[in-house]
Image 1: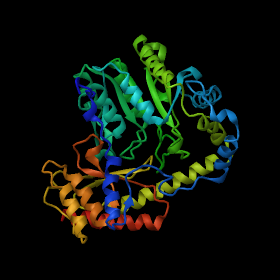
Image 2: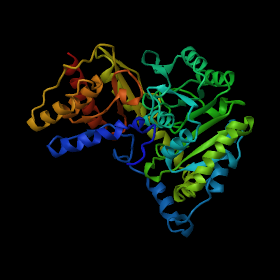
Image 3: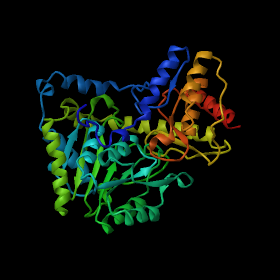
Image 4: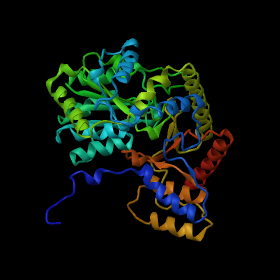
Length: 433
Protein backbone atom coordinates (compact mmCIF):
# COMPACT_ATOMS: atom_id res chain seq x y z
CA UNK A 1 0.00 0.00 0.00
CA UNK A 2 1.18 3.55 -0.64
CA UNK A 3 0.77 4.39 3.03
CA UNK A 4 0.99 2.31 6.19
CA UNK A 5 -2.48 0.91 7.00
CA UNK A 6 -1.84 -1.46 9.91
CA UNK A 7 -3.00 -0.36 13.36
CA UNK A 8 -0.21 0.13 15.89
CA UNK A 9 -1.70 -2.57 18.15
CA UNK A 10 -2.62 -5.16 15.51
CA UNK A 11 0.00 -7.66 16.67
CA UNK A 12 -1.45 -7.62 20.20
CA UNK A 13 -4.78 -9.09 19.03
CA UNK A 14 -4.53 -12.81 19.74
CA UNK A 15 -7.20 -15.31 20.78
CA UNK A 16 -5.76 -18.78 21.22
CA UNK A 17 -9.08 -20.00 22.63
CA UNK A 18 -10.41 -20.13 19.08
CA UNK A 19 -7.12 -20.48 17.19
CA UNK A 20 -6.70 -23.99 18.52
CA UNK A 21 -10.01 -24.97 16.92
CA UNK A 22 -8.38 -24.79 13.49
CA UNK A 23 -5.96 -27.52 14.52
CA UNK A 24 -8.74 -29.52 16.19
CA UNK A 25 -10.75 -29.41 12.96
CA UNK A 26 -7.77 -30.72 10.98
CA UNK A 27 -7.28 -33.54 13.47
CA UNK A 28 -10.94 -34.52 13.21
CA UNK A 29 -10.54 -34.68 9.43
CA UNK A 30 -7.64 -37.07 10.08
CA UNK A 31 -9.84 -39.30 12.24
CA UNK A 32 -9.08 -38.04 15.76
CA UNK A 33 -12.22 -37.78 17.96
CA UNK A 34 -11.96 -34.37 19.66
CA UNK A 35 -13.29 -33.42 23.09
CA UNK A 36 -13.59 -29.62 23.12
CA UNK A 37 -12.58 -27.95 26.39
CA UNK A 38 -11.48 -24.63 24.96
CA UNK A 39 -14.54 -22.35 24.75
CA UNK A 40 -16.86 -21.29 27.59
CA UNK A 41 -20.11 -21.90 25.72
CA UNK A 42 -22.53 -23.95 27.87
CA UNK A 43 -24.97 -24.36 24.96
CA UNK A 44 -22.31 -25.76 22.62
CA UNK A 45 -21.38 -28.30 25.32
CA UNK A 46 -24.96 -29.56 25.44
CA UNK A 47 -26.59 -27.62 28.26
CA UNK A 48 -30.35 -27.57 27.72
CA UNK A 49 -32.24 -24.29 27.83
CA UNK A 50 -35.42 -24.75 29.93
CA UNK A 51 -38.75 -24.75 28.11
CA UNK A 52 -40.13 -21.83 30.12
CA UNK A 53 -37.20 -19.66 29.01
CA UNK A 54 -37.71 -20.63 25.37
CA UNK A 55 -41.41 -19.81 25.69
CA UNK A 56 -40.60 -16.28 26.90
CA UNK A 57 -38.33 -15.70 23.91
CA UNK A 58 -40.76 -17.32 21.47
CA UNK A 59 -43.64 -15.14 22.65
CA UNK A 60 -41.55 -12.00 22.38
CA UNK A 61 -40.49 -13.00 18.87
CA UNK A 62 -44.15 -12.49 17.88
CA UNK A 63 -43.91 -8.78 18.75
CA UNK A 64 -42.98 -6.47 15.87
CA UNK A 65 -40.98 -4.12 18.11
CA UNK A 66 -38.45 -6.87 18.84
CA UNK A 67 -37.35 -6.66 15.20
CA UNK A 68 -36.59 -2.93 15.34
CA UNK A 69 -33.96 -0.64 16.79
CA UNK A 70 -34.01 0.15 20.49
CA UNK A 71 -32.61 3.30 22.15
CA UNK A 72 -28.82 3.55 21.94
CA UNK A 73 -28.28 2.92 25.66
CA UNK A 74 -30.81 0.08 25.70
CA UNK A 75 -34.50 -0.34 26.45
CA UNK A 76 -35.50 2.05 29.22
CA UNK A 77 -37.70 -0.51 31.00
CA UNK A 78 -34.84 -3.03 31.04
CA UNK A 79 -32.37 -0.46 32.35
CA UNK A 80 -34.84 0.57 35.05
CA UNK A 81 -35.28 -3.09 36.00
CA UNK A 82 -31.49 -3.48 36.37
CA UNK A 83 -31.34 -0.29 38.43
CA UNK A 84 -33.91 -1.75 40.82
CA UNK A 85 -31.81 -4.91 41.23
CA UNK A 86 -28.66 -2.86 41.85
CA UNK A 87 -30.12 -0.31 44.25
CA UNK A 88 -32.15 -2.85 46.22
CA UNK A 89 -28.99 -4.83 46.98
CA UNK A 90 -27.20 -2.01 48.79
CA UNK A 91 -24.94 -1.17 45.87
CA UNK A 92 -23.77 2.29 44.76
CA UNK A 93 -26.81 4.23 43.64
CA UNK A 94 -27.23 4.36 39.87
CA UNK A 95 -29.93 5.49 37.45
CA UNK A 96 -31.00 4.21 34.06
CA UNK A 97 -28.63 6.79 32.53
CA UNK A 98 -25.70 4.93 34.12
CA UNK A 99 -26.37 1.76 32.10
CA UNK A 100 -25.28 1.19 28.49
CA UNK A 101 -26.08 -1.97 26.52
CA UNK A 102 -23.63 -3.54 24.08
CA UNK A 103 -23.52 -6.39 21.59
CA UNK A 104 -22.07 -8.73 24.19
CA UNK A 105 -19.23 -7.96 26.57
CA UNK A 106 -16.73 -8.31 23.73
CA UNK A 107 -18.21 -5.13 22.27
CA UNK A 108 -18.13 -3.40 25.67
CA UNK A 109 -14.52 -4.45 26.28
CA UNK A 110 -13.17 -3.27 22.93
CA UNK A 111 -14.88 0.11 23.26
CA UNK A 112 -13.81 0.56 26.89
CA UNK A 113 -10.15 0.19 25.99
CA UNK A 114 -10.41 1.58 22.47
CA UNK A 115 -11.57 5.02 23.62
CA UNK A 116 -8.93 5.48 26.28
CA UNK A 117 -6.14 7.94 25.59
CA UNK A 118 -3.41 5.81 23.98
CA UNK A 119 -0.92 6.65 26.75
CA UNK A 120 -3.38 5.70 29.53
CA UNK A 121 -3.10 2.08 30.63
CA UNK A 122 -5.35 -0.30 32.51
CA UNK A 123 -3.39 -2.78 34.62
CA UNK A 124 -4.82 -6.27 34.10
CA UNK A 125 -4.47 -9.54 36.03
CA UNK A 126 -2.03 -12.18 34.84
CA UNK A 127 -3.39 -14.60 33.78
CA UNK A 128 -6.43 -12.83 32.42
CA UNK A 129 -9.20 -13.32 29.88
CA UNK A 130 -7.66 -12.73 26.45
CA UNK A 131 -10.23 -10.22 25.19
CA UNK A 132 -9.30 -7.84 28.01
CA UNK A 133 -5.52 -8.13 27.75
CA UNK A 134 -5.44 -8.09 23.93
CA UNK A 135 -7.83 -5.15 23.64
CA UNK A 136 -5.95 -3.13 26.25
CA UNK A 137 -2.60 -3.85 24.61
CA UNK A 138 -3.95 -3.10 21.12
CA UNK A 139 -5.22 0.34 22.14
CA UNK A 140 -1.73 1.27 23.38
CA UNK A 141 0.28 -0.58 20.76
CA UNK A 142 2.33 -2.08 23.58
CA UNK A 143 2.34 -5.32 25.62
CA UNK A 144 -0.15 -5.47 28.50
CA UNK A 145 0.63 -3.92 31.87
CA UNK A 146 -0.26 -6.54 34.44
CA UNK A 147 -0.19 -7.75 38.03
CA UNK A 148 0.31 -11.43 38.89
CA UNK A 149 -2.22 -13.84 40.37
CA UNK A 150 -0.76 -16.47 42.69
CA UNK A 151 -1.68 -20.15 42.09
CA UNK A 152 -0.26 -20.99 45.52
CA UNK A 153 -2.80 -18.64 47.13
CA UNK A 154 -6.10 -19.51 45.42
CA UNK A 155 -5.14 -17.38 42.39
CA UNK A 156 -5.54 -14.17 44.44
CA UNK A 157 -3.43 -11.10 43.60
CA UNK A 158 -0.67 -9.91 45.90
CA UNK A 159 -2.17 -6.56 46.89
CA UNK A 160 1.16 -5.00 47.84
CA UNK A 161 2.63 -6.02 44.48
CA UNK A 162 -0.37 -4.49 42.71
CA UNK A 163 0.11 -1.31 44.73
CA UNK A 164 3.82 -1.22 43.85
CA UNK A 165 3.16 -1.63 40.14
CA UNK A 166 0.53 1.11 40.19
CA UNK A 167 2.76 3.45 42.19
CA UNK A 168 5.77 3.14 39.91
CA UNK A 169 3.89 3.23 36.60
CA UNK A 170 2.26 6.66 36.26
CA UNK A 171 0.64 5.70 32.95
CA UNK A 172 -1.77 3.38 34.82
CA UNK A 173 -5.20 5.02 34.88
CA UNK A 174 -7.34 2.03 35.79
CA UNK A 175 -7.36 -1.42 37.40
CA UNK A 176 -9.14 -4.45 35.94
CA UNK A 177 -10.48 -7.22 38.14
CA UNK A 178 -12.50 -10.23 36.97
CA UNK A 179 -14.69 -11.71 39.69
CA UNK A 180 -15.42 -14.62 39.53
CA UNK A 181 -12.31 -15.01 37.47
CA UNK A 182 -11.74 -16.30 33.96
CA UNK A 183 -9.50 -18.27 33.44
CA UNK A 184 -8.79 -19.39 37.02
CA UNK A 185 -12.23 -19.89 38.61
CA UNK A 186 -11.16 -17.82 41.64
CA UNK A 187 -13.68 -15.83 43.68
CA UNK A 188 -12.40 -12.68 45.38
CA UNK A 189 -13.32 -12.19 49.05
CA UNK A 190 -14.91 -8.84 49.89
CA UNK A 191 -11.87 -7.56 51.82
CA UNK A 192 -9.65 -8.13 48.77
CA UNK A 193 -11.97 -6.11 46.52
CA UNK A 194 -12.01 -3.34 49.12
CA UNK A 195 -8.21 -3.23 49.09
CA UNK A 196 -8.22 -2.84 45.30
CA UNK A 197 -10.75 -0.01 45.67
CA UNK A 198 -8.44 1.68 48.19
CA UNK A 199 -5.52 1.52 45.76
CA UNK A 200 -7.72 3.14 43.11
CA UNK A 201 -8.76 5.85 45.56
CA UNK A 202 -5.17 6.49 46.69
CA UNK A 203 -3.80 6.88 43.15
CA UNK A 204 -6.87 8.54 41.58
CA UNK A 205 -7.71 5.63 39.25
CA UNK A 206 -10.92 4.08 37.98
CA UNK A 207 -11.85 0.41 38.24
CA UNK A 208 -13.18 -2.00 35.62
CA UNK A 209 -14.86 -5.10 37.06
CA UNK A 210 -15.85 -7.90 34.70
CA UNK A 211 -18.69 -9.49 36.69
CA UNK A 212 -20.41 -11.56 34.03
CA UNK A 213 -20.14 -14.65 36.31
CA UNK A 214 -21.29 -12.84 39.46
CA UNK A 215 -24.19 -15.23 40.12
CA UNK A 216 -22.16 -18.40 39.48
CA UNK A 217 -20.41 -18.69 42.87
CA UNK A 218 -20.29 -21.94 44.87
CA UNK A 219 -18.24 -24.09 47.28
CA UNK A 220 -19.42 -21.89 50.14
CA UNK A 221 -17.59 -18.83 48.84
CA UNK A 222 -18.93 -15.33 49.33
CA UNK A 223 -18.16 -12.16 47.43
CA UNK A 224 -19.76 -8.83 46.54
CA UNK A 225 -20.14 -6.96 43.26
CA UNK A 226 -18.00 -3.88 42.77
CA UNK A 227 -21.03 -1.64 43.26
CA UNK A 228 -21.38 -2.79 46.87
CA UNK A 229 -17.89 -1.65 47.92
CA UNK A 230 -16.76 1.02 45.44
CA UNK A 231 -17.81 4.01 47.58
CA UNK A 232 -16.99 7.23 45.71
CA UNK A 233 -14.36 5.78 43.34
CA UNK A 234 -15.24 5.97 39.61
CA UNK A 235 -15.87 2.54 38.14
CA UNK A 236 -17.39 0.32 35.50
CA UNK A 237 -19.06 -3.04 36.07
CA UNK A 238 -19.46 -5.26 33.00
CA UNK A 239 -22.33 -7.74 33.08
CA UNK A 240 -24.28 -9.90 30.66
CA UNK A 241 -26.51 -12.89 30.01
CA UNK A 242 -24.28 -15.10 27.88
CA UNK A 243 -23.00 -17.25 30.75
CA UNK A 244 -25.73 -17.01 33.36
CA UNK A 245 -28.94 -17.73 31.42
CA UNK A 246 -27.00 -19.00 29.35
CA UNK A 247 -27.56 -17.22 26.02
CA UNK A 248 -24.17 -16.44 24.43
CA UNK A 249 -25.68 -16.10 20.97
CA UNK A 250 -27.84 -13.19 22.13
CA UNK A 251 -24.78 -10.87 22.16
CA UNK A 252 -26.28 -8.98 25.07
CA UNK A 253 -24.10 -7.34 27.70
CA UNK A 254 -24.17 -4.06 29.56
CA UNK A 255 -22.06 -1.64 31.51
CA UNK A 256 -23.02 -0.11 34.85
CA UNK A 257 -21.13 3.12 35.52
CA UNK A 258 -20.48 4.28 39.09
CA UNK A 259 -19.71 7.81 40.26
CA UNK A 260 -19.56 9.23 36.74
CA UNK A 261 -19.90 12.80 38.05
CA UNK A 262 -17.03 12.51 40.55
CA UNK A 263 -14.38 13.23 37.92
CA UNK A 264 -14.77 15.37 34.79
CA UNK A 265 -12.26 13.29 32.75
CA UNK A 266 -14.02 10.06 33.68
CA UNK A 267 -17.36 11.62 32.72
CA UNK A 268 -16.01 12.65 29.30
CA UNK A 269 -14.48 9.21 28.81
CA UNK A 270 -17.80 7.46 29.48
CA UNK A 271 -19.53 9.92 27.13
CA UNK A 272 -17.08 8.95 24.38
CA UNK A 273 -18.01 5.29 24.83
CA UNK A 274 -21.70 6.18 24.61
CA UNK A 275 -21.06 8.32 21.52
CA UNK A 276 -19.29 5.39 19.89
CA UNK A 277 -22.31 3.21 20.61
CA UNK A 278 -24.57 5.90 19.16
CA UNK A 279 -22.67 5.71 15.87
CA UNK A 280 -23.60 2.01 15.77
CA UNK A 281 -27.23 3.01 16.58
CA UNK A 282 -28.00 0.38 19.24
CA UNK A 283 -27.58 -3.18 20.51
CA UNK A 284 -29.79 -6.25 20.11
CA UNK A 285 -33.43 -5.63 21.06
CA UNK A 286 -34.97 -9.06 21.65
CA UNK A 287 -32.69 -10.24 24.51
CA UNK A 288 -33.08 -6.90 26.28
CA UNK A 289 -36.84 -7.35 26.14
CA UNK A 290 -36.56 -10.91 27.44
CA UNK A 291 -34.09 -10.24 30.27
CA UNK A 292 -36.49 -8.92 32.96
CA UNK A 293 -39.08 -11.60 32.22
CA UNK A 294 -36.50 -14.38 32.54
CA UNK A 295 -34.94 -13.06 35.75
CA UNK A 296 -38.36 -12.52 37.36
CA UNK A 297 -39.69 -15.94 36.35
CA UNK A 298 -40.65 -18.07 39.40
CA UNK A 299 -38.44 -20.95 38.20
CA UNK A 300 -35.34 -18.89 37.49
CA UNK A 301 -33.65 -18.97 40.91
CA UNK A 302 -34.11 -22.74 41.27
CA UNK A 303 -32.73 -23.22 37.76
CA UNK A 304 -29.70 -21.07 38.57
CA UNK A 305 -29.08 -22.94 41.83
CA UNK A 306 -29.22 -26.26 40.01
CA UNK A 307 -26.49 -25.04 37.64
CA UNK A 308 -24.35 -23.82 40.55
CA UNK A 309 -24.62 -27.19 42.26
CA UNK A 310 -23.57 -29.02 39.11
CA UNK A 311 -20.51 -26.81 38.62
CA UNK A 312 -19.63 -27.28 42.28
CA UNK A 313 -19.78 -31.05 41.92
CA UNK A 314 -17.72 -31.02 38.73
CA UNK A 315 -15.22 -28.66 40.34
CA UNK A 316 -14.61 -31.21 43.07
CA UNK A 317 -14.34 -34.07 40.58
CA UNK A 318 -11.70 -32.19 38.57
CA UNK A 319 -9.79 -31.10 41.65
CA UNK A 320 -9.72 -34.64 43.10
CA UNK A 321 -8.45 -36.08 39.81
CA UNK A 322 -5.62 -33.60 39.28
CA UNK A 323 -4.48 -32.40 42.71
CA UNK A 324 -1.97 -35.18 43.43
CA UNK A 325 -0.03 -35.10 40.16
CA UNK A 326 3.60 -34.21 40.97
CA UNK A 327 4.67 -30.90 39.46
CA UNK A 328 1.10 -29.65 39.01
CA UNK A 329 -0.62 -26.78 40.88
CA UNK A 330 -4.41 -26.93 40.95
CA UNK A 331 -7.09 -25.08 42.94
CA UNK A 332 -10.79 -25.90 43.17
CA UNK A 333 -12.96 -23.76 40.94
CA UNK A 334 -15.13 -21.58 43.18
CA UNK A 335 -16.95 -19.53 40.59
CA UNK A 336 -17.66 -19.34 36.86
CA UNK A 337 -16.91 -22.69 35.16
CA UNK A 338 -13.18 -22.73 34.43
CA UNK A 339 -10.16 -24.33 36.06
CA UNK A 340 -6.59 -23.26 35.43
CA UNK A 341 -3.91 -25.88 36.02
CA UNK A 342 -0.32 -24.66 36.34
CA UNK A 343 2.95 -26.56 36.10
CA UNK A 344 5.75 -25.92 38.55
CA UNK A 345 8.79 -24.17 37.09
CA UNK A 346 10.97 -26.50 35.04
CA UNK A 347 8.42 -29.30 34.70
CA UNK A 348 7.85 -28.69 30.97
CA UNK A 349 10.57 -28.68 28.33
CA UNK A 350 10.97 -28.81 24.55
CA UNK A 351 11.78 -32.52 24.39
CA UNK A 352 8.64 -34.05 25.91
CA UNK A 353 6.13 -35.86 23.70
CA UNK A 354 3.16 -38.20 23.77
CA UNK A 355 2.82 -41.27 21.54
CA UNK A 356 0.68 -40.61 18.43
CA UNK A 357 -0.35 -43.68 16.44
CA UNK A 358 -1.70 -41.85 13.38
CA UNK A 359 1.23 -40.94 11.11
CA UNK A 360 -0.48 -37.96 9.46
CA UNK A 361 -1.48 -36.57 12.85
CA UNK A 362 2.06 -37.04 14.17
CA UNK A 363 3.46 -35.20 11.16
CA UNK A 364 1.05 -32.29 11.67
CA UNK A 365 1.88 -31.93 15.38
CA UNK A 366 5.60 -32.17 14.75
CA UNK A 367 5.24 -29.34 12.23
CA UNK A 368 3.26 -27.16 14.66
CA UNK A 369 5.61 -27.77 17.59
CA UNK A 370 8.81 -27.55 15.54
CA UNK A 371 9.21 -23.85 16.25
CA UNK A 372 12.04 -23.62 18.82
CA UNK A 373 10.36 -20.54 20.32
CA UNK A 374 7.02 -22.23 21.00
CA UNK A 375 5.87 -21.94 24.60
CA UNK A 376 6.30 -25.28 26.43
CA UNK A 377 2.67 -25.34 27.55
CA UNK A 378 1.47 -24.74 23.99
CA UNK A 379 3.64 -27.66 22.89
CA UNK A 380 2.03 -29.78 25.63
CA UNK A 381 -1.48 -28.71 24.59
CA UNK A 382 -0.96 -29.76 20.96
CA UNK A 383 0.54 -33.13 21.90
CA UNK A 384 -2.34 -33.68 24.31
CA UNK A 385 -4.85 -32.85 21.59
CA UNK A 386 -3.22 -35.16 19.05
CA UNK A 387 -2.70 -38.07 21.45
CA UNK A 388 -5.96 -37.94 23.43
CA UNK A 389 -8.34 -35.68 21.50
CA UNK A 390 -8.69 -33.36 24.53
CA UNK A 391 -8.66 -29.72 23.42
CA UNK A 392 -7.57 -27.32 26.18
CA UNK A 393 -6.05 -23.82 26.06
CA UNK A 394 -2.43 -23.09 27.04
CA UNK A 395 -2.20 -20.84 30.08
CA UNK A 396 0.40 -18.60 28.41
CA UNK A 397 -2.38 -17.55 26.02
CA UNK A 398 -3.95 -15.67 28.94
CA UNK A 399 -1.26 -12.98 29.28
CA UNK A 400 1.03 -14.85 31.67
CA UNK A 401 4.50 -16.41 31.56
CA UNK A 402 3.16 -19.17 33.80
CA UNK A 403 3.00 -22.59 32.15
CA UNK A 404 -0.25 -24.54 32.28
CA UNK A 405 -3.67 -24.87 30.68
CA UNK A 406 -7.36 -24.07 31.19
CA UNK A 407 -10.27 -26.49 31.08
CA UNK A 408 -14.00 -25.93 31.57
CA UNK A 409 -16.58 -27.64 33.77
CA UNK A 410 -19.28 -27.49 31.09
CA UNK A 411 -19.66 -31.13 30.07
CA UNK A 412 -23.21 -32.02 31.24
CA UNK A 413 -22.56 -35.78 31.34
CA UNK A 414 -20.77 -36.59 34.60
CA UNK A 415 -19.54 -39.98 33.40
CA UNK A 416 -18.10 -38.50 30.21
CA UNK A 417 -16.52 -35.65 32.19
CA UNK A 418 -14.88 -38.09 34.63
CA UNK A 419 -13.57 -40.22 31.77
CA UNK A 420 -12.08 -37.13 30.11
CA UNK A 421 -10.34 -36.21 33.36
CA UNK A 422 -8.92 -39.71 33.72
CA UNK A 423 -7.50 -39.46 30.21
CA UNK A 424 -6.20 -35.94 30.92
CA UNK A 425 -4.49 -37.07 34.13
CA UNK A 426 -2.89 -40.00 32.32
CA UNK A 427 -1.73 -37.68 29.51
CA UNK A 428 -0.13 -35.23 31.93
CA UNK A 429 1.65 -37.94 33.88
CA UNK A 430 2.92 -39.60 30.72
CA UNK A 431 4.10 -36.29 29.25
CA UNK A 432 6.06 -35.03 32.27
CA UNK A 433 7.50 -38.32 33.42
